[in-house]
Length: 260
Ligand SMILES: [Mg+2]
Image 1 (cartoon, rainbow, N blue to C red):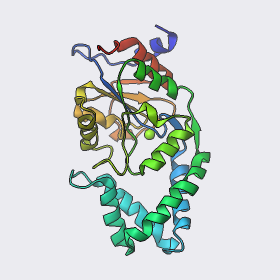
Image 2: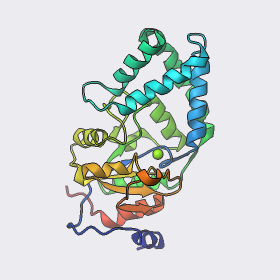
Image 3: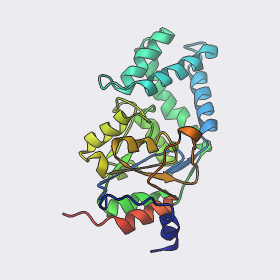
Image 4: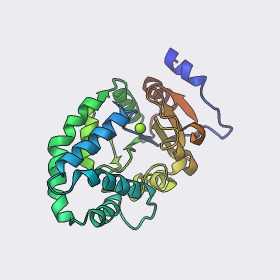
């Protein structure tokens, strides 16, 4: 076992249950697979969208509506509507504009403007090691990023980390999910979608609530260091904790190859 793995082992809470065999790795994007200055990014993102829509809607009110509609998605937990449907129902009624008028502008925004936000981000060299280790072990791989962004924006952020969508069996997006982190419904929908029981999923991420709340569904959890968002008293204990390199070593050392 290498030194990195040894260091991480000290943080491992051993479970009295028999050894767990993970079949899937769920991994967060922002602050986990890529560096992201979250506050700077959100602020720049809202500002850019507001400017982009200035011809259609007064900028003074636009970002407030956007924020409230985003909160509406995050609080939505019913399986009846996708996050996309929830967002547009809420946002269009707030601004009094049909989706047909918003869609073309949004398409242009994500194509031409969103990529400029790359300056808030940086790649993490060890991210690829984790994904390749998971692939070698035959794990299903899910990019478990907060599904408040369209798929195009998830793929763009992946590219900031020099990473490809080809690694993943599932990428959670505005269009394909019906709830958000930290709700159990989000994690259960992923497990159901990939056909793996929650107990056989390991969720890795940098947020002590949004990512580690996967534990409420029976999933294993790995808190990724290097950009931890600690929610203080609300923080949940993770099963494991370490750097991305340590996560890669953990997968390599402890997961037997998939049986064919
Ligand atoms: Mg994150």
